[in-house]
Image 1 (cartoon, rainbow, N blue to C red):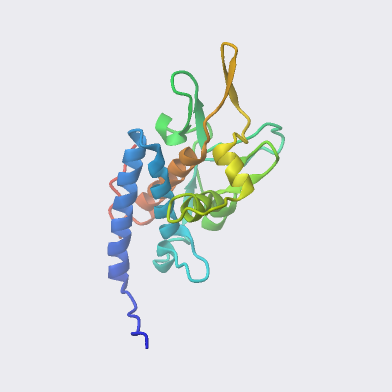
Image 2 (cartoon, rainbow, N blue to C red):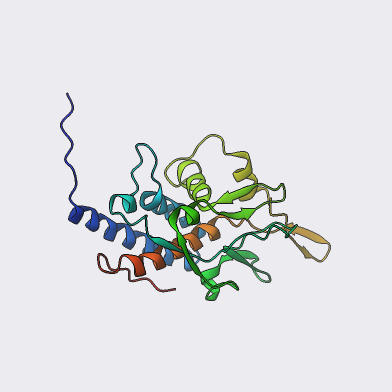
Length: 215
């Protein structure tokens, strides 16, 4: 016979949120110092905070903080753009070619806006060369649930595998006679999403927790 479960108090949940924020900030700082694989831990922290489905209870939902407006730095994908699109990131060319989160350069060309959580969570933020799209939820859950955040699955979603491994954004760099695929954008996207979440909590939860975050 199972022991009864004890409902957590709001104070207890707020302590947990403070700890999760601390973990997320430290992971972001490590990413910014060059430890790109820690993006998988960032995705897992974001899943804990945001993903609310059946038996998975988002921490921000339990605290009624998912109903707030969230900072969006990607804007809307341009339907007239025939190329691939990944507005959470920018491309660093030269030296070590890489995608960088917008926050690494002080923000993007579109600035920021504040939108309802459901729009923020489900709006498309990546388009690949086969017209396949990803929203923030799909990026976070693919990394956290199947690609090393909490689990390493024996098979990956095909579109995600192409995005994270097979250059489905289709950008290449020519170095003399050699053509090299651009590195994948997945971890940079995850880092930028974490930036949006932390900046949101700095504003929307400032009376409940401390968010000592700066880029």
